[in-house]
Length: 510
Image (cartoon, rainbow, N blue to C red; front, side, top):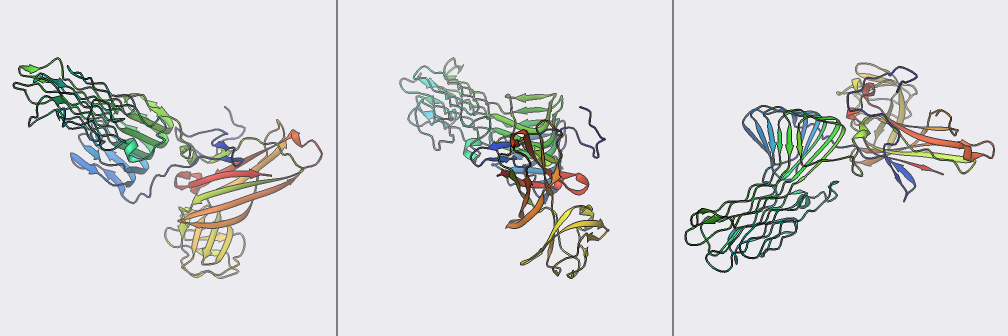
């Protein structure tokens, strides 16, 4: 498309242009914008791998991430890996949660072996599956009895193990591509079932554990190395003597979830996979056996939400895309426009309700008196502000809402005098969102005008609510020939919205 005027800003690849970035909440008759992803606080700083292995078992809040060639980061548990900048997994680097999911079942005599673990909890005995967990192999009967454990299931079903007695049942799929059940037990891959034999031995065919959870939230991301979330292989038992032994089933793959604001790029050397582990091999007194092999685990689930996805490498299994409810990386890119509505009355009211995190909150550097316009700011200082921005100044029960006229190195000058006086215990909040409305004849070009900021409320936990409103008095009787369109603009320093975090935007009309 060709714009009528030149662009003011430069936009990176993966940015968006569009109109309907949200969904219609028909229950409350509101147009809701999807929530912005949380990229964390950046409190852990910039991470660059420095050794062969690193283990992460708690949430991380990085400003940038670089995993270098020859280095592996192991991920344990359902932890959020947040990065405010670029996530760079270099060629030869690796991040892994292989085998960190639900455990495999233990192998043993048919009265002692177990199904694989899954979201259903502790497994029992029997050739049937434990929902996602694979069934355990049967070894009842003669000394030649043996049965391989079935593979665990998650994104796809696990494969049954084989044997010469009752067949096993592979673990079944659960959750969905949208990861609707976003709790640990539903995101872990399932374990394979244990192998069965006629007698117990010191080394038996245990099932492999399922893959774990890798979830990364970043501004941009490049994958030139390996992301490994496979299930473990089923265990091949030691050589049998007079009796036979069944092997364990493989664990299923786990969950890989990328949520990237801009471009998600898998290079030609990049490999992202969440696959099931192989089944172990059955044993006889003379070596490997035709029967007693464990089944392979099913695939895991991969979901990628990004402004732009470029895949020149390998991603397996097939990944799901798009934005689930309440998660939308588009929220960082400036303008959000509602669907068009037709006024039904001659007096028409439009209201925009915006909740945002006060990411830029600065204390005054000194006392600020009523009647003055200049507000000195402590570090971080006025460099976080632009002229024309609105600010909220509050302390205890006092509050002023002002517009910045000019910005100095360590101070801002407001358009109007302050009503109240403030100490250094006050806080100056940068208002990062404005609402606009356009009421024109159907088919005409939109003409947006800013709505009035009517109310401001501190909701706690650094969340503020803005209430914008405007009334329109319609002339004539043909109101059905008019259309209204609402728009919210997120604005940060120099129109860079990377540090803007809107929590919720909704509109109401009457």
